[in-house]
Image: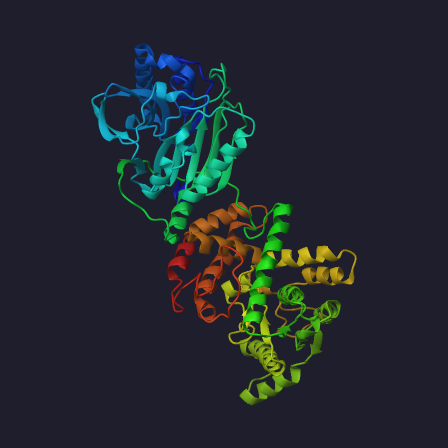
Length: 634
């Protein structure tokens, strides 16, 4: 439960119809199994104690009284279990029968939640037996204990407020206005559904879609426990199809006709973080809260974290993502050119990844506009650190794309500027590097004035996050097409284009760009080889992109970012390496906001972006002390 992680389970028993004793024995056995597996919330199906398909046996006092007796046995068994258990049974209130879910913790019945929507169509005849609990919010006496009874109840861990559970039952999810919508608006981060959904051709897909979409709309975790094997097959078959979703993703699901427990580790702090940023997620308080005290304990989470969160691991999804990103970049630049009545563009080409991607985007944009490729002025500006490899790749790309190519060496201009400001050319410090970057930007800006074009920026999201750019140098342009594309995605975008030119020279050039070490090439080359490798200085971009995604998207504590990074990169980096670069990330991310505060316009392509106009509004003089101090103690 530390860091917001909670292990939950959806259980399906081998139902014995009307045999409350057998069903309860199975329920208690599964509760104990779940406890051994460090489960904190366990949900059983609708009417699990009796079985869902008892039909007119629900009119028999013998069945109803035994169900209550077995509920007491389940409550007694829960005394030694540090786990919330939710189990379905029939319950009589005011001489009416209700289909309820009992919520239990450590020997106490926390509350009874009645089903709201009672189906009475097709194969369902529940209205023959059960009343709707839609308007009920009251209390009942159970074993000398006053117990809340109603649909507007939330069950909240006093030790962890983000662990707030709302309950609905089967048909409630399928209704036009599910109770879970109100639960979530009242603060529930977890929805438990005790269900008995029969199987039909295609129904499992629709059931999965419902859980996905409802968890996404409500920004919740959703635990769906379904009745299955053993229920009557007189007219229908029940599958025991269990699902656990979280904010639109299915974390785990069982096969159909499953008996056992389906587990998943949900992250309620992630859900709470998402909601804090959603101003349209309006809360209301027409609910009673039932509090319980579950201690926060750490456990080894069983949850996958993609080491490249910006890049889909599925090849087909990755290709689709590349198409979408290119289209957004193209349409962004196209609109800017049309709005400014500009038909020419200037772009600096180094032979590296970012400028290559920007050139490809600009070329595709001009094709869409019906403008000649010659209207793209691609400028390479070799200086002290330029190698023949990057220079030749830059020139080759320009030639293959048919753009206007210019080579403007800047060495003499830089040396003259060193002389003007009294800087020793043998002192390879930040001034030595930044003079080159600013000289290149001056050339591009002046040339754009000369031809009546705009300067297309090449810097990517990862560089923006780390401040890995020269202020008023490569930091500046008239439109930054890569501004929200992280470095890990840049590689796949270039690779995506390379794959469209199989066997051609352009593919060869793009593949070599992909194989070239990332470098600003601002320090002198040795034996015509790159000496300044960015990832040796600021750290691996795959780590920084992972940090960036989880820090900006969810606002996690540094300790949690470290924890999930260890999971994602356990085969690649040890804790010490991850911790080292995480400290670098926080230090640079917080101190470099001043560069982002005046970043040029550029199109947002994903859920994480750093534009000061819309996505990240942060003071440029903020302190990183709180973040670094926590990491120093890990």
